[in-house]
Structure formats: C-alpha cells, structure tokens
Length: 37
Figure 1 (tube, rainbow, N blue to C red):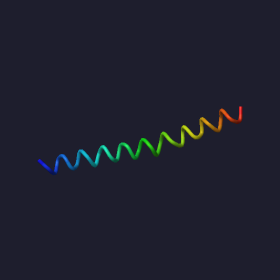
Figure 2 (spheres, rainbow, N blue to C red; figure 1 turned 180 degrees about the vertical axis):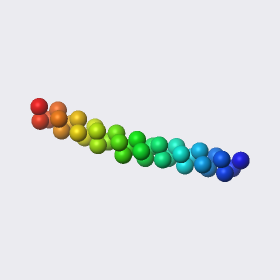
Figure 3 (cartoon, one colour; figure 1 turned 180 degrees about the horizontal axis):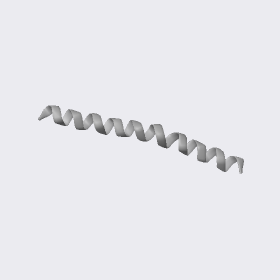
C-alpha cells in the first residue's frame, strides 16, 4: 500500500517537472514576441 502511494507521489512530481519544463520556455517565448512586436 505504501509503495503505491510513493509511486503516485513520484508521478505527480514528474508531471510538475514536465509542466515547468514545457510551460516556462513557452511563457518566455511569448514575452519575447510581445517585446519585439
């Protein structure tokens, strides 16, 4: 049971990491586009 909870927790952390990895560069790119236009 404890193992399952641990796996779920790891998946959540991974999703958060992936979100940051994808979302932050996109936000930065958007900012650059707005500044250049």
